[in-house]
Length: 331
Ligand SMILES: [Zn+2]
Ligand SMILES: [Zn+2]
Image 1 (cartoon, helix red, strand yellow):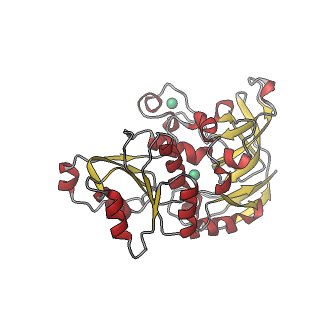
Image 2 (tube, protein in one colour):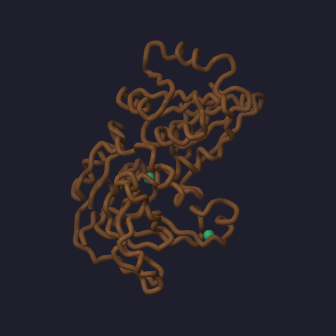
Image 3 (cartoon, rainbow, N blue to C red):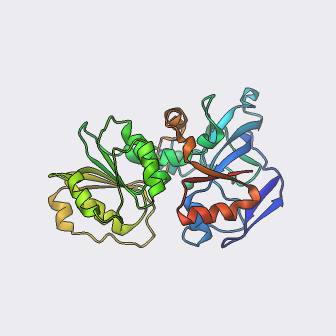
C-alpha cells in the first residue's frame, strides 16, 4: 500500500509499504479521509513528542475491508469513524479516569496510508448519510464533547469562547446543545468569525478591533461570564478569559498549552471568586457516541480543502498558518 512516512522535522515521503497485519480481533480499514490536526503540525515542529520514521494521522474515517478470525464477517463493508486507541475497561485509568487514557490501549496504525489496522471496538459505525469528511472529525469532536461535558450549565449561562478554529467551533456546537442563548466568540480572523456566526454563535468580537474592550465589557455585563472556553492554547488568553469570569465561573482548557508554560494570574482573584479551572485532554469516554451527535451539526462547511497523500506538507503549512478551518488528506 502507499503510505506517507514521516522522517522527522517537516519531511514526509510516500513509499510502498506492506499492508498492516490484523490480529484475530482486529479489522482492516481502507482509509477514506484523514484530518490534519494542530498536533501533526506540532510534531513536525518538534513541539510534541514523536519518534520518526512513522506513519502519522489520527483523525480518520474509512471502510472495513477485512476482519480477523474472531470478528464477524458481517462487519466487512461498514463505514466507520476510527478511534486511535482501544480500552480494556478494567484498568485503573479506565475505571477512575477515562477509557481514552487506558493503560492497556492498543493503538490503531497511522492513517496517512491506504489502510489502517485496529481492534473492532475502535471502528465505530457512522450514520448512513454522514460523509467520510465529517466522520473524520469524530476525533476532535470527541475531545470537545468530553471537555464541554465537564462544565455545569444553567439556562441563562453566559459563555465566552476565545478562538474560533475547529476546536472553538466544535465547543460552540456542543454548548449550544445545552439550550444556551448567550455564546460570545472572540476571534481575530474575519472568516473564522463569520463561520462562528454561521455555526450558531450569538455574538462575535474581534480582539484586534478598535472597540474590543468596550464591546466585551458590554457583553460581559455586570456579573461577568459564567463559562469561558480557551480554544487556542495560549497562556495569556487563558489568563484574560479567566479575568472575565464572574463568581464561581468555570474555565475550560481545550487548547493545548505548551509544556512548561505558566498561568500568570492573580491567585487571590481565583480564590476569592471561587473560580474552577478544567484541563481537558483527549477523547474522554465520548468517542463512540459522537458520530450520531454531530450528524446534525452541518460540519461539512468546516472542510476547507482536501489534499492527496503526497501533498501533506501543503496541508501542514496551511494548518500552521491558521487560515481556513480543516484540511483533509485523501489517501
Ligand atoms: Zn487531533
Ligand atoms: Zn483500561
